[in-house]
Image 1 (tube, rainbow, N blue to C red):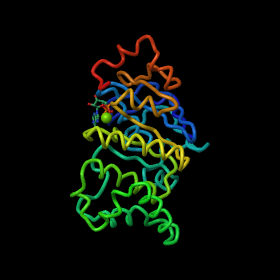
Image 2 (cartoon, rainbow, N blue to C red):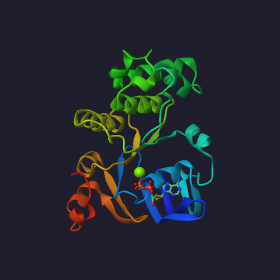
Image 3 (cartoon, rainbow, N blue to C red):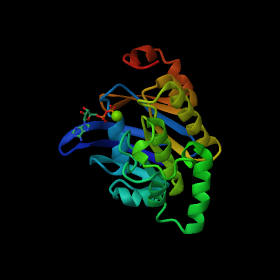
Length: 236
Ligand code: ADP
Ligand code: MG
């Protein structure tokens, strides 16, 4: 569904990613792992069009999207959820959802809204509340609900469980699985919770210093001889 080929990218003239190759298959969860500062967020931002691309190609559903702007990528069904600031805190939950669904027809919006609320029932009773009053976990749920309302096909999540209580983190992993298994969506997941992420993922990539040092089946990464070494500094 998404292929990143020989990507070199960064900020202004600063190079962060080097020769990154990543394939994201449809209806799978692909995990991007790696220590702090290894370039995981930069990879998601590069796919969405928020960095300088020095070289390489990004192909989505057979189409070269390397240099198209973020709003066009949204229209193609790509959703990027940054780690924070992924909702409008001054607006109500309902307004957030409405804004996200402004491009879909009212009928489809209603249908998508019902689907999103059935997946995140926590939000249903809080539709009139200001999004800024939600808990960290509820905010992440709202950000995903917003992607569902606008009919996203590929959802890129940047550390959705960071700062969440263990209870919410575990709920989040279950909901991410649901996105793949029940809604047939495709997920690109950046996580610091390596074992939990590998547990629900199909494929995984390990980034270190802006380069891919491992890619393969998520199950094989756990058995990799250097796995412990790769995970130094990680929450296991
Ligand atoms: P990760 O998400 O794996 O922790 P990042 O992609 O956020 O890593 O960061 C990779 C490198 O890029 C770090 O050295 C970081 O300091 C740098 N970086 C991140 N954002 C910017 C930016 N906006 N401008 C310049 N450098 C940045
Ligand atoms: Mg990051």
